[in-house]
Amino acid sequence: MLERELTATIGMALHRHSHDCNLRANQLALKQSEARYRHIFDSSPLGIFRTTVDGRALAVNAEMARIVGCADPEEALSDFTVLASQLYVDPQRRQEFINLLRQTKAVNHFEYEGKRKDGRRIWISMNARLTSDDPVDGNAGEEMIDGFAIDITERKLAEQEVLLDEARLESLLRIHQHPAGGRGPGTARFCPAIDPRAHRQRGRLYLSI
Image (cartoon, rainbow, N blue to C red; front, side):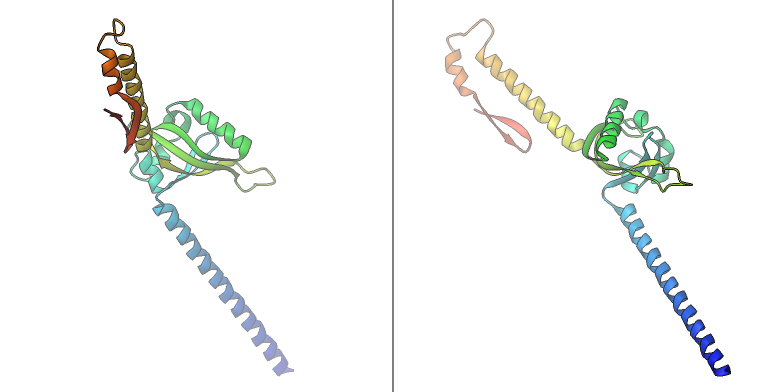
C-alpha cells in the first residue's frame, strides 16, 4: 500500500515537473519570438505604423519617426495626434485613404504629400490594411490601421523635373515651328536642326541637334 502511494506521489511530481518545464520552455520561446519581432520592428528600413481610423498614432518604429522628422518614436507619437491636419498637406487625401480602406480592407501604394515636423514637405507611399482590436465584453474591437510607409520624395522630384523638361521642349519646338512674325526665309533651313525625337538619359531630356 505504501509503495503504491509513493509511486503515485512520484508520478504526480514528475508530471508536474514535466508540465512546469514545458511551460517554462513555451514562455522562453514566446519571449524569444517577441524579441525577434521587436528587433524587426525597430530596425526595419520601412516605416511601420499603427493608427486609429480617426487619425491617432498608436505605434511607429524608428524609421517612421525619421520620415516625419522626429528623433524617436516617442516624439512622433507625441507630436502627431491628428494625422489629417498634421501630416497630410491635403486633409481630404486622408479621407480618400480611409474610404478606400473601408471599401477594400487593404490599400497598396497609396501616395500622398505630407508634412514633416519641421514643415518641410515630403511624399510618402504606403501599404495598409484595416484591422480590429480584440473584442471586449462582447463588443467589437476598435478599428485600427496597420501599415508600412516609404519616403518617395526624391522619386517625385525627379518625375516633376522630367515633366518640366518635357514642357520646356514642347515650348521650344512651338517657338521654332511658329516664329514670331510668321515663317521667315531662314525658318525652313533652321527647323530641321531640331529633332523632336528627344531622348532620355538619367531621367532628363536632351535634344538631338
